[in-house]
Each structure stands twice: as structure tokens, then as C-alpha cells.
Amino acid sequence: MDRQQRVVLNGCFSEWRDVISGVPQGSVLGPLLFIMYINDIDDCVAGKILKFADDTKIFHTVHSDEDVSALQFDMCNLVEWSKEWQMLFNADKCKVMYMGYNNKLTEYYMNNVKLECVSEEKDRSTETSHQTSCWYAGI
Image (tube, rainbow, N blue to C red):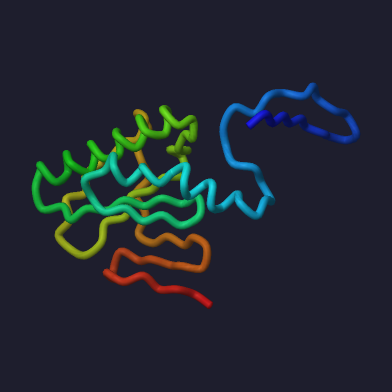
């Protein structure tokens, strides 16, 4: 696609620049194109993956050091995938949540950034807590 964009701030216009990646915003086909664009992300993780709009969640059952390594390996693979497709993850917004009890509270990293550990997370209209193994959808 031959697309260009520029920024307008307080009536001042930047120069037009070529857009080399991404999905057109506000289009009817945009969400479908985005799903097609990221469809192969599942191929780079051994664990389970959930995708909704531009959110991605991976999860593993972790009982051993090998399981810890597998989850960390998946996160490294996601970083490599994101570099290849020029859709970098913002590691500062990525989080780890341990579900259930007797978890190994391992530190995980994405692109050499230690991920924040949280006990609950709310995104979109869904809230998840470390005390449950269920997702609660808010209305």
C-alpha cells in the first residue's frame, strides 16, 4: 500500500512520510486486515494464546523449572515475531499474573525488561484476579 501520514499540532503540519507498516485506522477492513496480519503469532508460542483486538495474552501451567523456561522462551519468541513484523510490544505495559496457589514466583522478562507482577488486571470490560481461575466479563 502506498500510504503517507503527517502530524498536525496546533495548526502546524509536519512533512508527509511514507507508512511502511500497520493497519489503516477507521476503516471497515482494518480489523480484518489486522487479524490477518497477526494470525501467525500463534505459531511462535508453545503455550496457549488469547488475542482480542490489539491485546495478546499467553499462558502456561507452570509446575517445574522446565515450564518456567518454556514460558520465558515463548516471550522471547514473541519479541522476535514483533521485530520481524514491526509491531513491537511495549514491555512496560506487559504484566505477569500468577493464578492459583503454590506458584513459583519467577521473574519474567520481555526484551530485557522485567515484567511487573500483578494480583489482578482489568482490560476492556474483563477483570481477572490471581485468586480465581476464571475470567469475569463486566457489562
